[in-house]
Length: 107
Image 1 (cartoon, rainbow, N blue to C red):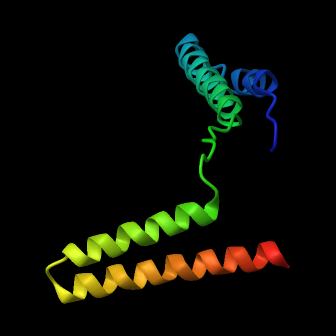
Image 2: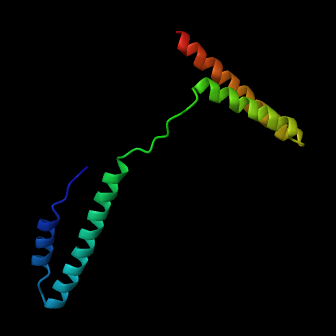
Image 3: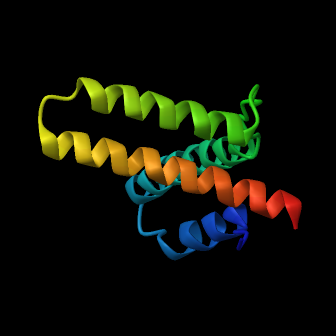
């Protein structure tokens, strides 16, 4: 990430715009806002680096099996055949994913 020397840039701008005190005041106000924005952004980026991770209680195979069972139960209660087919397809995908995980553990 490129770093910017804000104070040097501010000095250059203030030297460039010196026709009167009004422009200097506006420039100082604008640079004050930019400094605040930059500091807030830097603080937000520093806080963003912390990861909020939830620890899984069940292993992946168990979670996939539970999701497949939940989808099958939901498909049994579905009234529309299209909705039922979608739910059953998702349940089969959970079973296939579970089999792939088991296969990868064995190899």
